[in-house]
Image (spheres, rainbow, N blue to C red):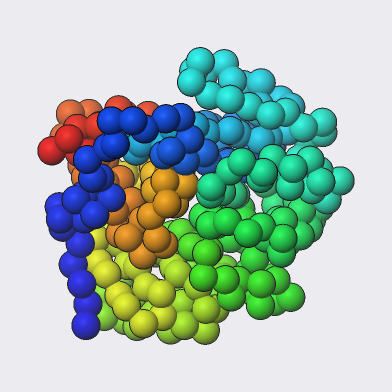
Length: 283
């Protein structure tokens, strides 16, 4: 049976808040991303996560990226690492940052250096909280020797069509039924959850399948996958389960993008999408 995601999913992730709630009751997300070349992806992860309701986000990144990200907004906390890219030598410092975190988003802007891939492999072996695996981290875990490490109920991968091919070796056609079957099969084989981004988002944990049809053709613009990963990480950090978080994130990201595209048309930016998340949440 295939489920179609609708506005009811908002009620599953947004419930009345306890009037006595305190900081950290709604989670602390760790975003691992960036490099000397890229800083936008982890910043978009963090901004979207905040708009989706997480209490705190910490971005850990190589120093140049961390400094740029910190300048984007006073809401962003960054932890700079020496060097241009993530390397295994950074593992201990990043692991220490997990102490008070409730979920992780990893991959955006990290680059595809072999040492960065090694860092990602080793990090995922030890992490004990939910993780959104996106962008360059998908390339890392697509390596044959890394694939067994994906068998973790706390992981969710968020590939677009080409990243799905890199991960599985399967080139998807435009036929929706074929895509559904391929995503379900891959999720079952990898023993994880996959959220395939596309005109129709397909989510599967190897048993269930859900479809999200919100969105716009203009969301091909760079950065909208980063906002999706941030929203998803936000819900995981707030204590929602993988399935509910994935469905809600796809719906909200698509609808926020739809609203932004209605205003800006082909000039829409990922930052515009971030600004529309509260309108979707409050709808």
